[in-house]
Length: 249
Length: 249
Image 1 (cartoon, each protein chain N blue to C red):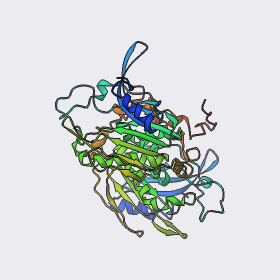
Image 2 (image 1 turned 90 degrees about the vertical axis):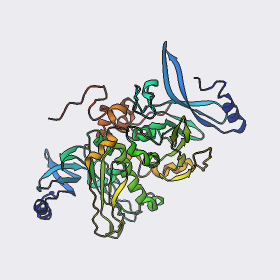
Image 3 (image 1 turned 30 degrees about the vertical axis):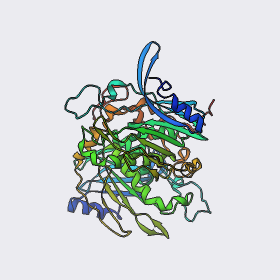
């Protein structure tokens, strides 16, 4: 779908009318050089109703084939291809970034934007309470949700805004926990129900400097020469180029 | 100093006698190719009293010159040079890693070891409650301490053991909060005083698989092509090779 069609035009109109921008996630169908492509995408719309940034989800969770043993399917790897990276945009008087859902569990998401001076990372997520491959994580789902966003905020001196689709959809119960997190890592506003709810916080972007200029002054303290494996290999057994890692010795 | 001298031999003897290994941090003075070098170093000693691994601190905090306005100095950048990276070692029936103090605040620390299959990261830390450049962080020091280690554990499916020098030393009050963290990110044991105290937990390293094979199955879910900036630049204004980042446009 297009991000700006008959279904969504009212959002753009209202943004302009009341002077409030928004983040919108959608399934993107596009044709690039004659090839049909599908991405899990979000856009950032400013208070004038103009699209100022687009982001395509990098970390696609789930699986690519139907797996009948699951209570429900999670076929993001079937229907989408991953985006190429994380950018930032000057908007709303600061440096804005976006991520989507599973991206928030990966420290690289925040760091790549932190290295571009991000001051607010906006994240939409639809996360089932139940994780079929690891049901032993179910009762920790909200704890993990906040842990990763709070760490990402603190470690990069940025606000993080996480917004959940909460409650039951097609029989699947989703976690809530929408929240606004300060650069200190503290949650400064959050929702506590599974219904429609608004969480509101004053976000003074200058508070980022308290962390960006001290503990997390990257220019002074980071040591990129020690980080090579992060880009040189994909996992424990596969290199970034898809070949197997050679066993030791 | 040497890690195994008259002052520390008793530790090695006791390790062998009671069959319990240990992690030991020390200031390392060494000569490499005729050049005197100083590192902030730790070693891992197995239950036979043998040194099985050595780690040199990568992330040196503080400053290199005397700054009289501070209540106390933090001259790690003056007295040490950074180590080159994070390795892992097979010991204690699993894959062990080490870090020191400020390393624990950096997500790269855990990830580089996670990419080598680490199952337990051991971290010693001496952290003043008061942070002279950012006193507004003081009351969050324990929160930050646990946040970063819990996130590092969860995001890499590894145990993390953080051990503090707690209480007052040379007039400076240090945070405690020594803890053992499971791959779930949950704190499963911790100290609650500033005195000598032992925290004990059974660490079944196979629990790491619950995370390493699902949500954090790196081979399936990581996207290294999106992580370039992590190694290509040091900070927001300086490239990894020390040259300035070109301004936009």
